[in-house]
Length: 167
Length: 431
Image (cartoon, rainbow over all chains, first blue to last red; front, side, top):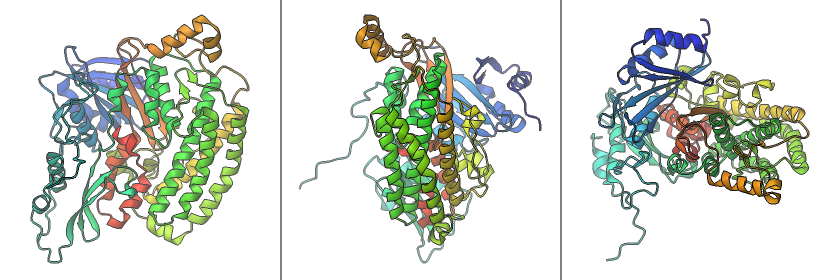
């Protein structure tokens, strides 16, 4: 199969998902596609099956505090055959923080989605094992949200009892 | 007889009870389609908890395994014991202030982490780096790769049972520490790179030390090959252990030498060349077996390639030239200016107080090939001197995720060798 260029890739994406793509940014380094939330699963499936984006490098969230659509989830994909890197971005509302999972497309999405859930409280529908990854399950806050203070919340984490118990 | 909730009843967790319960529950849910054999008269099924304070887990990794005799039927990893929230800290620091924190991510190759952050910020704020500074960065990044692989080699072989080897690799690491001491003034957490260049030029003594090391190291490497390549115990412990195919490796997202050991020649230095790697003549070592022995060969050959790259850097590096960008709005002024001119002092103060301010709304990603795989920084700027969001794509995180799959079906005695072979660093994974 022929190797396709960045321009061809973006052309193909625009043709196939014309009504779903909000914006395509290409600032010279890596292309970034801003996508409507509902299309993310079918778009990822298309990228993997038709355009050889078989390697999911990363998924991460961003808090756009005070902006209209508060959270952003960015998918970082690699096509080894075409030597291309692609960023796909979706924006979601503060009161509807659910996205479809992509673990059925790339198995490696598992931990990355757990990290997004842990840090931002964005849930992934259909994820096989959506637990917190860094913070303990007993923790009630989402630390990378902008309203979470840098110093943490006193008393939010139980500390081990260091003084021996006497009777 | 193994009842479904037996281990939950017998272990009443007292510390973070919800977290413990969720973890044990998740182990039960894994491969839920497999029908478990309920009759177990010899009680060979058990749950084994390893870590987080186990010395062979290379840090604070906790592995929860369900065993059938000596076979691991399934396992779960519990990470986060070294989570310091450095992405949150980054949002409250200037770009340059944040750099010492990157030293403490993958603490076995601090120089690579510094370079990765600087390259990302430089792309974000369109800062050019002088040629000589880039060569210094390349030389030191390759030294960091050798240093990191040396630690991997020593500890992995110690995990496989040979203690004395650890001392020999550490003797070589000590030389690299001495070099970094001479180059940056620190042995371990170097923080030598600066946005727009490096802190100081290589001194003649440092150049001599590096050249001497580069000259002597291949002989050392050859003697290690001689010891290990045909060593019966070493081969038996590693061959066919922790195997993974290339399709699975891609699917589960392995990174670095672990991915290349399955036959995928993905190396950021050739995939997406940064600095001057495009001009360098070097190979990307790959193997097709995908087991622990293949990872050993890949890393050993990588060390030899690093030596070649350092030699080429010395050939091409200009004798004289600036080591930092001469633009006080984007990079620290030189100390001569700071001490002897008013403007220099003001600029130095401004760089420390505010630092580089990339344009509002700018986003950039830059990845380097760190010793353990692709290390990338994705930075979103809001126009101030602090990043709005800084996301670290760390290779150990990807490799640890793969470990859950790699460990399935292995012998419990091989766990430590496999962890050693994948070479995770918890500071990198837990951020």
